[in-house]
Amino acid sequence: MSMDRKLFEEFPPVTTGQWMEKITADLKGADFNRKLLWKTIGGFDLRPFYREEDLAGLPFINSLPGEFPFVRTTGKTDNRWYVREEIEVTDPVKANAKALNVLSRGVDSLAFHFAADTMFNRAMIEHLLENIFLEAVEVSFVPLNSPVELLKTFREVVESRGIKPALLKGAIETDPLGRLMVNGKLCVSVDEAMDYLVTLIREGSFFPAMKMIRVNGAAFGNAGATAVQELGMTIAMGNEYLAQLTERGITPDEAAGHTGFTFSTGSSYFIEIAKLRAARMLWAAIVKGYSPENEESMKMNIHSVTSEWNKTVYDPYVNMLRTQTEAMSATLGGADSLTVGRFDKAFAAPGEFSERIARNQQLLLKEESHFDKVADPAAGSYYIENVTASLANHAWELFLNIEERGGFMECLKSGYIQSAVAETREKRLQNVAMGKEKLLGTNIYPGTAEKAPKFTAKPTEELKGEAAAEVEPLRQIRAAEEFEKLRMATEKAAKRPKVFMLTAGNLVMRKARAQFSSGFFGVAGYEIIDNPGFDNISDGVAMALKMKADIIVLCSSDEEYEQFAPAAAALTKGKAVLVIAGAPSSESSLREQGIENFISLRSNILETLHHYNRLLGIK
Image (cartoon, rainbow, N blue to C red; front, side, top):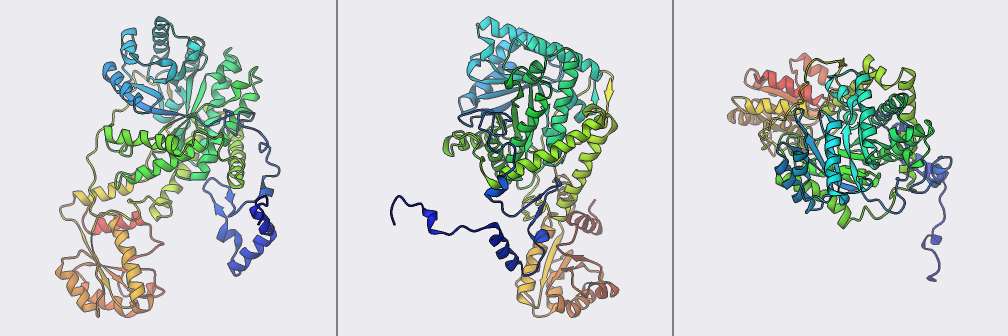
């Protein structure tokens, strides 16, 4: 074959119709939509395959990186992002030492978090920033009070060093609407908070590249919201800030230019990539509606944080796998900066090992995988481009719905935001309880020998004085919490329950059902006793009772249950709890004979295990 011939000239083109004919034949009469369409919880369907023709009509498809509507990132030549480290400031000298240490280990973005009672002064900020080359590092401050005072103090330090303010990047992260939403309370009224933001932005004009507002969109994701809800509600909150600030005399360029966003990044790999691409496009459209003078004002600055919703206490090293794919989604989606959460964040204070792992997860993507070298790596993917469009369209509809209801603040006051997210959260928690949304090591494939780690109490934000604004708080939750409580109750019990797999009959079925049942009861932390099989039920029951089993799970085929189950029930009555593995057609008949306990793929894992805990006297 000639070297100038293209490889794929050897293969004839295949049309979409031909693909569909093949798929239809393989389905053997099954419904295509039911079998192969992914019905996302966000309310839109995704097809099993996309082709070049599916790109036709997408309005953004021909834009270049750095061009409006910025779906293809705000940069033009690469995909660089800042590797961010979060540092709690209780002692500025210690916080500075930690900052210098992590800067030497690959971090180029620092976020200093301050307690609510912090008093800002020049000496404190000078100690905090000593020997930090501010022009080369993104520095963000996250105060819970007095951001204007912090900003003024920071300015004094910058001027004393003779640094050009235009060279500094970072933020004074202020988000009164986000704090109100999460905490349910604000010390000042919303109007007073907005007036204060006007002062902050005017003072902040000294630092043209720094953000004064950081919209907390991650709060939606960490409350169980869908990607569509996180997108639509976050841009609605951003629009609320624009509207309130421009009404107070701040120009659209000033308001938008000083506003940044934080998004959570969850485990739905391609959807999370598309979410950030869609976010930039939607924000550009919103800002354009305010007629800014500078196109740069329409660019969205995105800080991504790995999700807390799907992180677990048990089998915590799995969290590293979760955060790694989430970091990949965030960077491929074009995040400007990224915080990878520690794998032990749910239960432990910051530690050197977990922080180092979190940093290195980003450095692997940069230094070994070179994710930072190509602008918009997802461009041209038929699938991701269509997911981007679907997310954008549905999020825009939600945004318009919020605006029709009076805007974000009115929807927060009325509880519309909270109730919409709560409805989604309950659906997702139900899916977790049923095992449809899987949390490895928690509701599937548990490590039965594992014990819960010791928890480090987390400081809580305290409200000073009376609340001037109150709403129903948006509940922040991890999906695994109820399963973890269930298992911890087992660990605290006086006796760890024993579950004996009574395997008999059909070899294939008994093995499959024993494996399923072992995983099912292992979720609660019970001791599992498996067996190769018994020739008769009486021997199996005798062995189980000899080993002082609390629960005996009969594992066999549906047909054999009609004989085996009544025999096992007679032998175990009053001595152990008998459970039938599966949902046999004879279930109703067996129930009439007094056999009450069945587990199957249709079981609600959480509710069922609570039931067995109650039977065994575990509270």
